[in-house]
Image 1 (cartoon, one colour):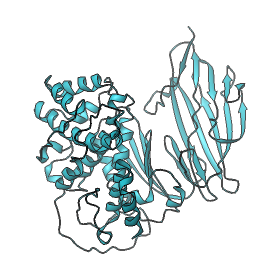
Image 2 (cartoon, rainbow, N blue to C red):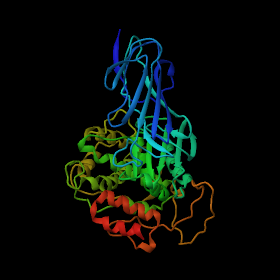
Image 3 (cartoon, rainbow, N blue to C red):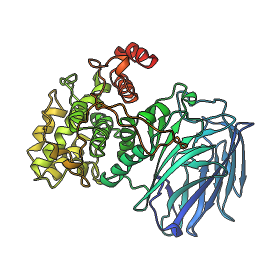
Image 4 (cartoon, helix red, strand yellow):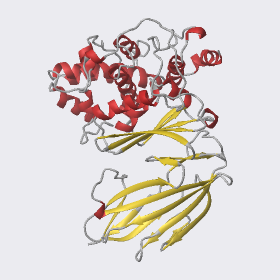
Length: 469
């Protein structure tokens, strides 16, 4: 039997490589010419009789493509149909030295940050269908994540947690001190307690220098990689766990449930901060609660306010729903159980409703969901801490408010600090509570910028003044 199959996923969790198509990408970099060279080699099981590879997307500035044992089908497509395993060498030039609006990469004389090559493979096989596995490595200084590769001098911190790897990559040109311990602690907490919808073995946080930012966003998730500007990485508390939640849950494309994409990342981000002891329970509740979007219908994708409400009201509703599931299930299940169901289509309201009903153990919860997701309305968020603990923590682990102090800090040689001076807890900045320039910390600045992203231009002038102080 001859069948044809396309690669629907990168099977990084596959342990049986004997029946897998393995694509290995080796990245090297020439700073003088700002050219990245990618050598693609393939390991093919005997069952594969044909392999089709799309070599380079149009978005890249292609210099050259050299192939071995491949027949060119069109401008970007090559086909292997026998003989020794194929190889492709691709030279790509990057004209920009910053990330700009999109993310295809930047290159400077000292470093480059690039996305991996999407080859869009498909294949024919004769017996058992193989999996497709992508592996990337760097020739020289650098580090390869799942979808992102940094080439150049850097600091790194790695953690191995039960067969999974967490990495924090900080380029040499980043000038702000980055607390790698705090960032990795909260990401490790998420890795240990959340239930990923897609199993992966490797999660990487890349910090990029402000001189490379251009018009690029300050934080973004790409598959299991997260990109953080040095400002938000230094501030630490808000953006890293939010973006990490995106890597765990992915994207929900269904219009009626699109709000879940940002709503769950916003809620889980604050939940991880609470259980990691980075914020107090009072700060957690203050961060989650909102009245501003109480009349917005979350399921109405075309709502003029849906962008901001996805974050703010979405997180509020999900926090209350988490408590509802715990109460109705007798503390047996939580919202994390709902989000981790692989066989539930959470991009549809019906799929989400079914999963919530299953784990709450109460069919009447559908009325609750209709009231707060499909119509305007805002639930109360229970103020009892026991509804917001993770499996590995308890209320005793929550941080308690401490008096204001002026700590001292000794210099460190490594910019990824192992200790961070303790800061006085403060409410997150909002339109109504931006604080005064003299009282704002880096965390306050980040929270203000997050508010700008959520709520639009009405705080733009205040943010500019705030950062300028």
